Image (cartoon, rainbow, N blue to C red; front, side, top):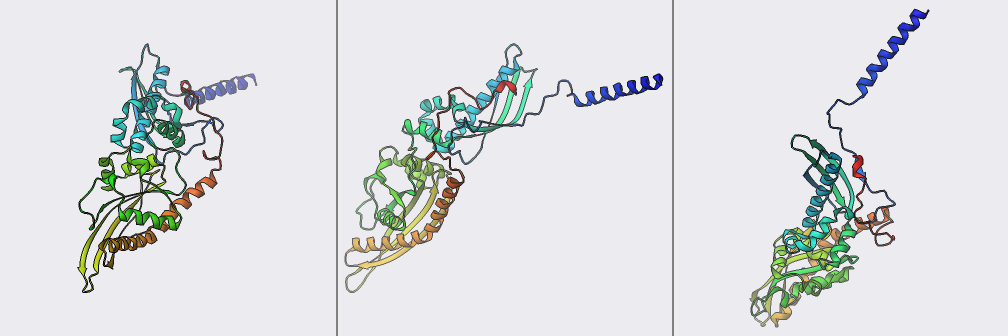
Length: 352
């Protein structure tokens, strides 16, 4: 009996040793680091995040073999790089470059704007003595917008159902082309009026004409969505309608009435997502003894036709945003929040 107990005890110890060996990590193997780290809801600023995730990587040198500190520095550097990408996508490369000194301070405080991040790759290179990180991150939009607004880069208060309309026009009745900001086009006035009648809040061009150079407007009019979105954010607009318009004489009737044809081509861009919402081209013809009156009537007809086509797409965007606000009642517009602490990262990085 004692002999059997000794055998069973020996077998039990052997099995326990094998199980422990299988469960233990292989020496020198880098543990997988793919946990999702984010601020706890009680510490988070209830703000709208950017539409897209931003990826970044960083490699930092390690001193005295302290890879724990090296890992912290690598994550901090990668978050700064991710925020730099986010700012460039929001403001555009040119605007970022022209304000690089002010934005450098924002980038250095990247951890203040982090909503969440996930580490995709982490390794300690003992040969090169570096700590390497690759991650993806999202940022709180409203917190960052407030900072940029305080620096005059754009308005953080987006007006509900706010639309900024900017049209480049070649008018038949105008004696010569004028600088973009010098005159409000007939087509822009007509389109704005039709949108107001439909239920939109039109934001005047005066809010941005002193802060945005004409060459930037031309980039937006030529199809640069990011520049268009930046212009909208600076004006506090939810949507931006950009377009080109022209008018020309077709004929003169025997009664002396002038026939004017107007053409208008429009793009609707979301300021928050830099996305094209809808596009439309229209033309119309009107007659009058006064060419200016005929031109105004033709643009009025074309603008009305364009709004009838574009309005359902505009409403769809606003309805989607309304559903998101209902689903998230603790939105920045209604919920009190505290400013994030300076220097506080979303997690204790030393635990990674």
